[in-house]
Image (cartoon, rainbow, N blue to C red; front, side, top):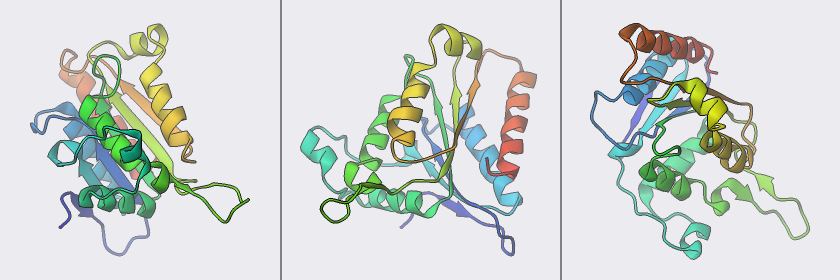
Length: 207
């Protein structure tokens, strides 16, 4: 049974979009959930086919060894998600900045999904390794309490750069675009509404 949402407007040839909501708290008032829902609803209305994964609602084990990481996934929900990554054309990743990086649960989720045997395909001996996710576009949305400019210029947006370069780009995914949304929880209602509207504009074009 699928444990996450799949939506499509019938009769329109849009893109296949996978939204990954990486907030570890399932509480509905989290702003990350509102951003994921805004993107998904707007993309569906524009005729795109959308599937949404909410990491907080998933039950999966944490990898504890190199052997675990390098083998084929055996957790059914992770196998389903890998199938959705292979299916989609565009991926939207939303997560909050915790201690300057990804929340631990979301990092554990990525380690489960982006295993070598899934993202890299080894052909016959002597051939070049192929990247299974090559050509899929990505939009990353990161929220934080600090102003976004502080994270980008003072801290160098290091965790975002790591996710882009060491995970997504390494798997062949591009173009990779990103949004940093700062002052979450302390900014004005107008600030949060403007961010939601900007995300809806990206959703209409599936970018």
